[in-house]
Length: 74
Image (tube, rainbow, N blue to C red; front, side, top):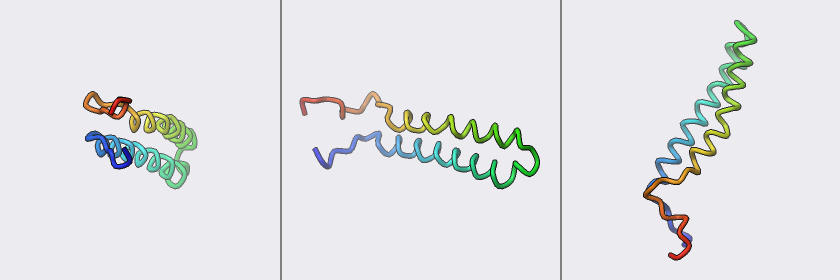
């Protein structure tokens, strides 16, 4: 099934890219802007961004109820 793409795939991709955009914004904002005003806040932003990375991967791979890609008998 090389061309098989579940119906929820675009939704999962949007969710993943949205979370990754938040991570990137937090990392860049912490390093470029916030560190000039508050180093502890910049560190906290980096910690939150680092914690969001696995959340993004889990959200991208979460099975929706309508998905059938786990069925072996297609």
